Image (cartoon, helix red, strand yellow):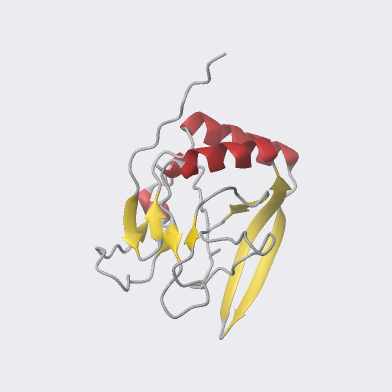
Length: 173
């Protein structure tokens, strides 16, 4: 049997190691994830103190879904670039290739006034030869402009065009 291939458009590089991946999920896939999460009704309030008065507030649903992570990994492998270890680090010149996604997923639901302050995500390790390199953020719905929301990215260190941020769009659209 043949499987319909999900073809992604080219990435938009918006920072040193920051990319926008349009249409990673279809609108129907996004709606299905939202419906399943809402019907499970397992969201829990999450408050994280980042220090210096920076606090995260949102509702989070943690879950594992091997089929979803496998689908996302397969789609991303076709477009994500290899990473080469930076000069002056112990990984200098080492080539890293995307092979999988962390199986633990988090769905975050924000209400008016909720937010996540500027921060750096930490690296996770799955053995000595497998480390996280990117954080994958998927928007599952599209918000009206008047509702605000989005992600602000730091200015790039290299010559890539700066971008102020990303507005939520279902499936990464």
